[in-house]
Length: 190
Image 1 (cartoon, helix red, strand yellow):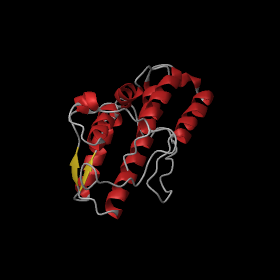
Image 2 (cartoon, rainbow, N blue to C red):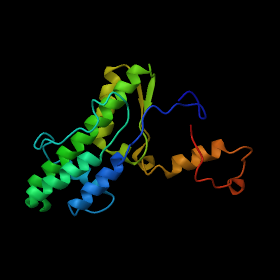
Image 3 (cartoon, rainbow, N blue to C red):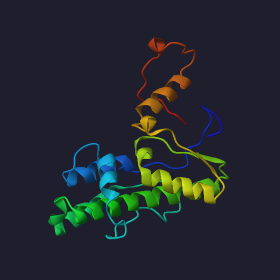
Image 4 (cartoon, one colour):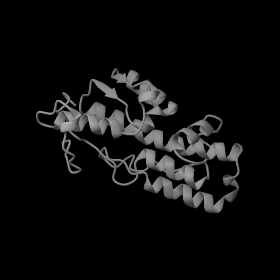
């Protein structure tokens, strides 16, 4: 992103986004909605290396994401290990292992993209940006690569709706009052 209206999309979600994967895995575990905060809290008490889960598209050669395979891996894991549906150490370990897989992919792909495109700063935003492990790992990785890192306070790390609305506002011609904005569900950001 060079300015508010000048940016290039270099990667996107092909199917399930990270937040959607958190929500669906939480539902599979009977933990509730939204899944991100619940899984994150349980993951703090778990071992992220306990269960080996896939890192989808980690070495795909592009900057796209896909978490449907990871979600499916958890689904089949739970079929083989229904005891994971009970709260306790094993469930905490599964939550930590799942979170670790998501964070690994997000961090590694973000840093790889930043290095390839000579990015000077990274902004972490959206609902999943509230995840402590993701915040810490992106911060550490960016610092190691001498890339500035920005993340809003957690109160602003919510669903993307506000960001989408702000972008729509800046893309409307002559919009000075929100009442004058015409809705366009097909508005392209790029």
